[in-house]
Image (cartoon, rainbow, N blue to C red):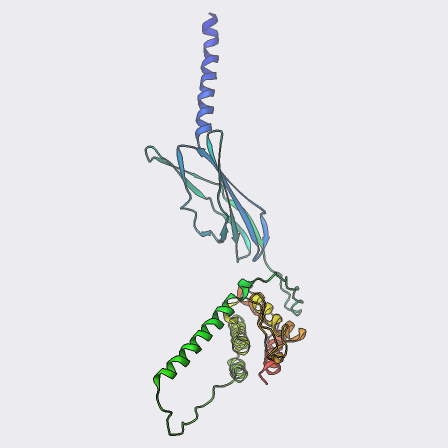
Length: 336
């Protein structure tokens, strides 16, 4: 009678031990976010963590660069370790979204493959709700002042493109001189017809501004096209006027480069030492820009960025003011 009375208890303990063993061997997967409410254009961090047996191989190939309406900007280096006979895995994903409202990070599916027989089992995380606040825009007020630029320390790598370009130009000039001397051709006796000189950058930019005004884009409701072309005109002018790759740089890089112009300007003579490789090359003193000119072009470019990427809607006074600001900026900075 005593044996029969304890038999069910023994079977229950045995079943619990078997179940705990199976749960301990099954993979575990979880996902969490750094915050569930962000502003439009801000980023958040998605933290993925898993535990799985040593005999399994984890496959993350199904996690794409787009998760619903979120884009994956960066993935941290995966952190892996072994603990209590298991693989411990963790990785962070930096996400961004460009549409406001309620949204959801969809479930992330991860596969686990048995290395011995190739059998596959999949787990998925739970969807995570995210709320994205839109950028408040008051159409009755002008655009607020721009926050100051965060200065980053410059290294020689920031000037590598310019140094490489200057070196290639010198080598090309030397090769051209050597080739010309080896030709040993007598100079032509006829008088060459003078060719038409190329138009200076400021004339091209002013002509393009007039064409933009005649197109009447913002009067037709094409606000994004108006600011896109206005920004392109100014970036091409900066590129031609100051020999800066402004069409390939973001606004912050362009403003930083413009602020540096003229800072190392000095009269050039036979006793002037050459600049170090990690310092900016001298610019003509007439190219230096005043703080007011830097502020004007920064406001124009950043306003255009807000319209193109954040769907901002500036006032009508801002449309005309920034066009006039662009025309005045070109006339003030044109070559002497």
